[in-house]
Image (cartoon, rainbow, N blue to C red):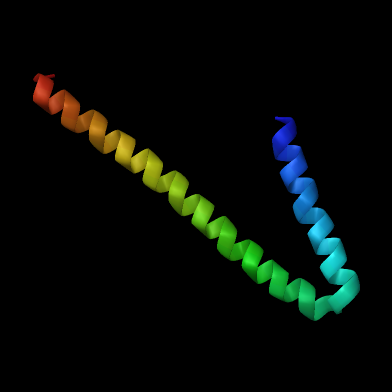
Length: 65
């Protein structure tokens, strides 16, 4: 649980540094990349769930359940 907080704190620190160095334009660009990274995380989680469910169904079909 603590490592998640450290990762989030790193993202916040990066946003602060970019905001101070590049202003609103830099934050908008960083926000776009944060959005893209978040979309990939959602995709990977959905893919993981779907592949596990497909494997479970296939295994049950082979076992005759």
